[in-house]
Image (cartoon, rainbow, N blue to C red; front, side, top):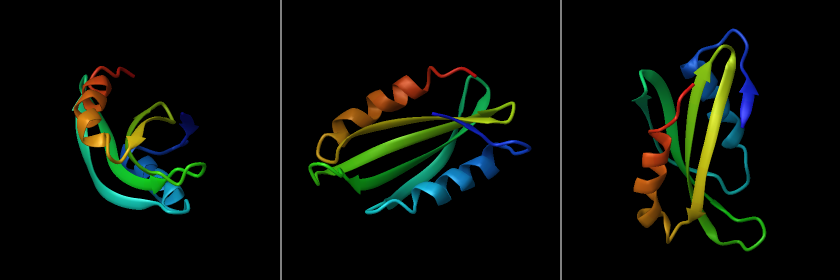
Length: 99
C-alpha cells in the first residue's frame, strides 16, 4: 500500500499507521521496532488478528518505509501456526526493499 503522509517523517507516519490499524476488530499488537534497509530507516510491527472469513488466527509482519511524503507499507501475513516458519523469509524479502 502507498499512503500519503504529507509533511511527515517515518516515525510520525508509523504512529498514524499504528493508530489506524489498532482500531480493527480483533487486533492484537505484539511487538515493534525499526531497521535500516539500503541506508533507509524502516519501522515494523508484528500483530495478530482473526481472519474475518474463517476466524482462523493470523499473524502479520507490517513493514513501513517513508519517502517524499508517502508511506510504503508491505504486509506479510499467514496463519499464526505457520508464522514461525515464515517470519525469516518475510524479513529476507523486506531486506531487499529500495525506495
